[in-house]
Image (cartoon, rainbow, N blue to C red; front, side):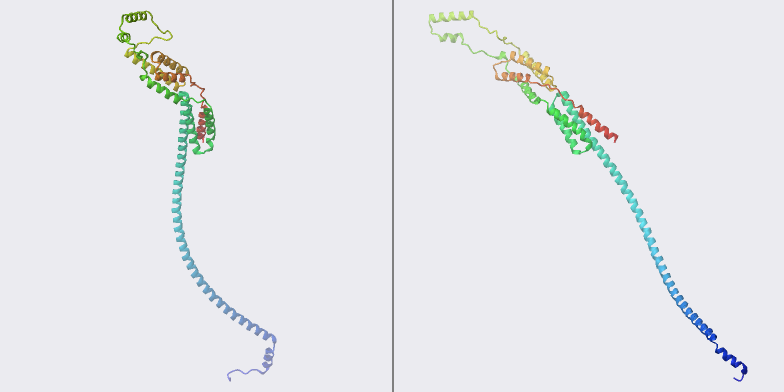
Length: 344
């Protein structure tokens, strides 16, 4: 204390007055407040730095975890891309197989339709041939029915015009008069088979007349009976009774008999061919000629000959010709369907 310089007495009032100045206290308060604010700010900054450091550490951990997750995601993405590429390859392969199967199915459908149309065309052509060559209406009807049944299995709208045309042609064929050609053919066949067994007229034997010895035995053995018998024999030799309403029996050698039967068979076979071809003129002429031959050369008293003549007469009176309808409409409709398919 002794080392301090002595305070002048005159400065004491001044210092006292200074401490009593309110602005000094205001300044001191401001400085204290500023110091407190600075300390508070430093504390908050320190806390903020600590929190920021903690959060940065957490962020770094999250970044690391995120990097790990991203890495795993990348690996999974790569694996998924690889699998996706494999799936795309399989899908392309399946698509190619599907296209190939679709193409095969279309080709199979086209070839199946072509085969079906070929079968229908064959049936219609068969019907035309049956009508033109043999006039067999029933066979033509069966052929057209087979064609219509074949079309009905497909149930396609493009085949409806053809089916309508076939239905019209079938109605026209069913409206035609029926000719039993198979039955007539069978009757002709029976007559032809029986030709070899028909008895000839020259094989007819007259009733056995009594021989002269037998006639002599019928009379009593007397002179007047013998005289009467001789007179009767003389009278019989002078009178001859002969029928002129029919020709005499033709005598044939065995070779001529064989030729007669064979030629008669040929006549009937020609009539049979004329029946199948619906040739009315030839059919009747051949039957007429065969009928005349049988009447002239064969025994008319036999039932087999009478049955053959009756069959030939009935067959000759049958009409075998009729105006055959044309199937050009069905053929035209079929060609239209085929042309439409080729354009499509």
